[in-house]
Amino acid sequence: MDWHGWFSLGLAGAALLLMSSGRYAPHLVMMAALVVLSASGIIGPEQALAGFSNPGLITVVALFVVASGVHHSGGVDLLVHYILGSPKTVRGAQARIALPVTLLSGFLNNTPVVATMIPAVHAWSRKIGIAPSKLMIPLSYAAIFGGTLTLIGTSTNLVVNGQYQQLTGEEGFSIFAITQVGLPVAIIGVAVMLLVLPRMLPDRKDQQKFGSVKEFTLEVAVAFEGPLVGKSVGEAGLRELDRLYLVEIERDGSVVTAVPSEERLRGGDRLVFAGDTQAISDLLRINGIVPSVHDDEPSLSKDRAERRLVEAVLSPQSDVLGQTIRDARFRDRYGAVVLAVARGGERVPGNLGNIRLKPGDVLLLEARPAFVSRQRYNKDFLLINDLETEAPRHDRAWLSWGILLVLVGLAACGIMTMLNAALVGAFVMILSGCCTVGQAQKAVDVPVILTIAASFAMGGALEQTGAASYLAGAVFSLSDGHTLLALLLVYLVVSVLTEVITNNAAAVLIVPVVLSLTSAMGVDSEPFIIAVMMAASASFATPLGYQTNMMVFGPGGYRFSDFVRVGLPMNVFIGLVTVGVISVVYSV
Image 1 (cartoon, rainbow, N blue to C red):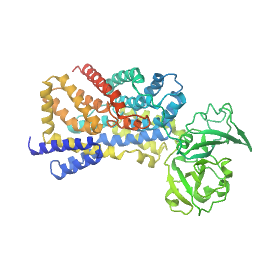
Image 2 (cartoon, rainbow, N blue to C red; image 1 turned 60 degrees about the horizontal axis):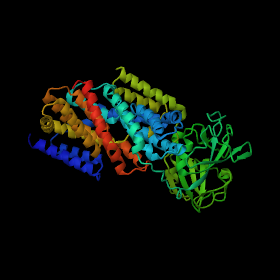
Image 3 (tube, rainbow, N blue to C red; image 1 turned 180 degrees about the horizontal axis):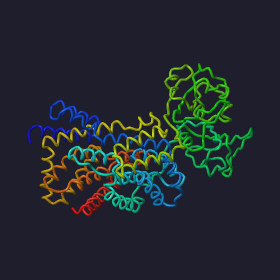
Image 4 (cartoon, one colour; image 1 turned 120 degrees about the vertical axis):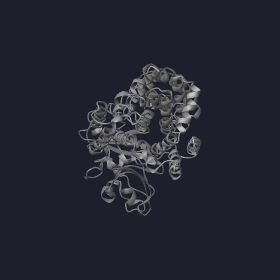
């Protein structure tokens, strides 16, 4: 190995140290390494940029959009509504979360699944009287297990498959190639999780602070011919909302106060709630709830995907001061509808449309996207805050599931490649209105994409300069030529790297080493590549190792030590189970 190999090894080591320190973003570190490798001439420009055109990476981008379509159409909300229910025990609650999330994560990217489930599980935990700390780690772990069920379950699987195709020239893996290993591991993992975690997880009550939250009088309406018409208040779930209380119902000029749970809803009912800005998004996600109309103009609730929730503070120079909300005609004047109002940090009593506006009033508006840019420096408002909360398009929920199932079917039957099936699925999600172009753009995690693409350059340099062969020789000597021991060592290395750097970067850096190792040993590379996929996903020991772990860290009220105490034994156990299953399936 000449200086190019040693330089590449040193650069890879430096990149690992910088990423594990947590001070530098992984995509910045890997992009810097790409620049150094290309500028030094160790790899050519085509190899430096090969990752950006890799089919696996483009498939990941397309599947981000597909997941966005399911999320923004309310597809995941549909699942939550029918499955969570009212379990009586912690184990029962964890099972209600784990089983559907594991299955769902086999076909959708983990991140939007967990992002959608966190607020639902948080509100549900209060309803059933179980601490969020008992439920959030199982949510993340279930999503991790689900990612190992199919090739599209997580971006890591697709990226490893893409790099495998690039380095070997082989066709790569089918969508269910990993299932023969991932399914038994997921079944065992979820079973052990449900057996052990109810006792091991901390029991920390919800620590949210409500004192600083602005409280509003919030008015919405029941959609005519919507799914809530004819249902009682209790059946509609309006008694179980987080930080919202149904104060009264205005109907045909009369008011129903002290609303009983048995009261039946009618189309056009105006529902008055006491609540806050954090809770309004939960209310507007309910299918059949629309913003209340204060005049004879059509409601802005139409085409809700093109609306924004905006918090605005009235200035002393505002033209609407002294007018009621109904008379101010916000729709004509600003292209916005008032959903809620607060004054002095407290709700303003009375009918929302009859409230007279004063300086300093905080208004919660549903407005067009251009409202923020047009009104930010308007004298009418002191402060404008875009809450960026978008209500799902419930009428397209089943359509989004249909698109996903067709996508999977086309790829599984070999009618289309995984890349083409994902691209078509993403295109149809946008074309059908399951998600907008803006939502699709926001769904693509650019730092993740840059990290993956730049990692290909590092992996290519290790392979081209002989550094990968050098590392493979080290693993070969440690295993003393025993295939099963070599497989265990590969799993261990990837698992450790995944806990300290990103799972995608860890996998991409190891693939060329694995291919060199299997070539030297004269054995099939497929079980080793499957081991890399599994090890890069099975990250339980720290909140840093996997994105979904970090997402549940705050909402669950966890400490770093909680993950180590629960996740480290899980890492070891799942590692041994995975290697055992691979050895049986592939007769290693």
